[in-house]
Length: 244
Image 1 (cartoon, rainbow, N blue to C red):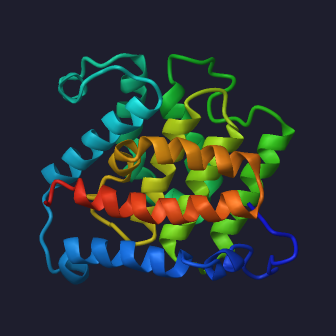
Image 2 (cartoon, one colour):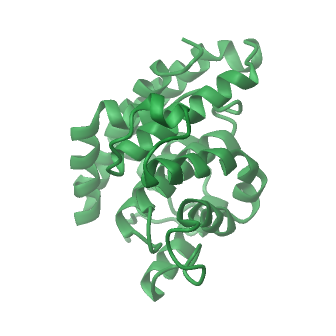
């Protein structure tokens, strides 16, 4: 995630917002979200629209995790185990907004506890799998608390770090995508949670998986490509909103 030659002690993510195409990509994605919400709050949103966004997002996230359940099955609560895990997370994610703003590590642990409940042992729910995972999560949390870069960039880094480091015993992809949505809500980009970033990733699945592999391998090019991809995915997720 970091380029040692470029990291600022005050803002460890600032250098990422200087990469070519990244500021303009995220600005365009943010403009699309703002247009959907009619300039930050002028458009009324209803609870059922938020609920639908969460449901569609849960289905998309489960599909990316390997679920074969249809949206109708997920809507009826009849999805497979992976879909059920994604639904549990979608039900609890918005309640973690205050925690994400103050103690991100606790919010991430709670997301895994929701996803893994009844599937993995209680002794590993919400706990990093090893010292390296714990260190990476700690660094991510510190970055989230100190950075001033655009929220969409933060969301993209949180997603990629969790998905590629796989710090938990299970469901890391589901946790990563829920954490991404949580960043968008908690940082005021989409406070009603009516965009569907998970659907954006599903629609661009081949690019999504390819760019995560590039991020995992490491290096500046892979990270840069992931950020450019993420801006595109957020725009696609905006198009999937129930407000459309």
